[in-house]
Amino acid sequence: MTPRAALASACFLVLLSVGTPACAKRESEPASSAPAAAEAAPAAPQAGGTAGKLPEAAPRKIIKNANLSIEAEKLSEVRDRAIHAAEKVGGYVAASTEHNSGDDGVTSISLTLKVPVDRLTETLAALRGMGTRTTYESVTSQDVSAEFYDLEARLRAQRAIEAQLLEIVKEAKTVPDLLAVQRQLGEVREEIERMEGRRNQLDQQASLSTIQLAIHRRAGSSSLATTVSQAGSDAQAVLSALVHGSIRVAGVLGPLALFFGPLGLIGFFLVRRIHRRIIRV
Image 1 (cartoon, one colour):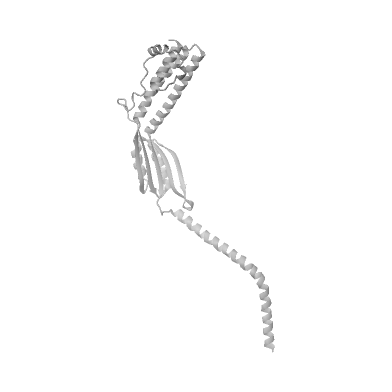
Image 2 (cartoon, rainbow, N blue to C red):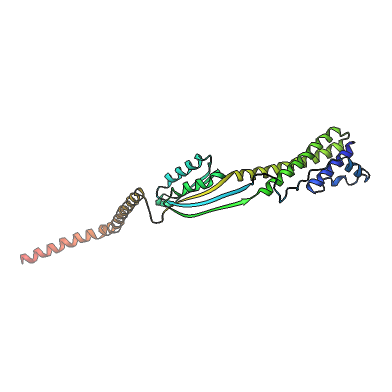
């Protein structure tokens, strides 16, 4: 097979597998080479052959996630127990956030837990038992089996095209032919990377369930430490108000005392002197 015919054969495979005109720039080649390329090209794998149909005995790929909200008294303690419960079944903590509300301290904690999908029910039961009350719970499921196995079939087709393009590179005699094959090879490899990324993402999501856990303090409840802290803050506020009030009173009466004090003394002595004269008379 000549390099030109081999390149046409590879383009023919791409058209069959992905359905896009990958070799649009080669349209100017003689039409007589197309039949020969078609005869020389092996049958391309049918990329979409598994769309909507699963391979026999293939395990289903189902993504399961959950949201859980519980009330508790000791938030930090429940958080540590929840993390331990996830790690105990082979999971881990993906994210942790504490929410504070002024003088009340930590009022809620949010955790994102990753656990094996077959241990999801067990982990949810353990988390529910850590709170005084469950305020919200939901579990969602999404079957991605068809997309996952269709991606695998398309990947096999793209890898077959990649292998043939690598053989064509070895046979290329001219620079234009070599550049054309390399460009096509780059496009195929880019498509393979994209499909592999999506397939791996689906596989990971189907293997590990995500639990969004919210731990709240019951409305109106507060710990002893919080109550003592609030009492100390209130006492400090009252004392501060008394000090500030005394300073303000002194600030107002001070100038008045300086102004009227001497006048009062003079008046006092005058009245006293007049009183003595009246007594003598």
